[in-house]
Length: 265
Image (cartoon, rainbow, N blue to C red; front, side, top):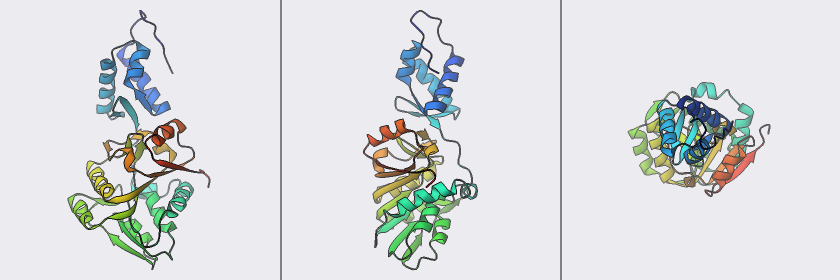
């Protein structure tokens, strides 16, 4: 709720400020320090300190000028594979149409990318490099698709490999198309919960000509603990139609092409 305090009114207390910041993050996904300072008639540095405190407590992620709602920590990959199956399949079918014959493509880890592997045409000659054993298994019946697994340390939450060995394995490849898995994405860019995962994805992005991200609406406008890259590294965002329109407008300003998929496609 927006609370306006005219000059000369009793100053807003710290607990009030923190409570209102939490509420606004929950309802709007982001806050701007300058706007809050003007609204509350307090120094902007005071608001920045509040945001810093909340960020250190894991309640938001600081970004330039303000903060984003923190996306909850990732559930185990096996649990996520059983959630929102119809929506993930719809996102995957739309993304599969972006793949072209004879490309070298990278398919990242994540439950929606596993659905993508299942959705790819079995008759299209393609080379797919992946960091996900589950993606590789999903492609095992596709005789026209050459599947290459990246080596490295398997993260049991994401279901993908990370670490220095995984990063070094990427040195041999350039990708025509990359389907990047993210835990959250906003106008500031994609983000994840693990620093090694973020480092691995940055290396993938540096080797990809075109990058697509599939995201459920709940991931839009929120942040993970570790940013991956600016949003302009993503070319196409395929998102469910329930994604917040104000955040999508901010993202479009960065040049990303956005395709909305019906929730009950």
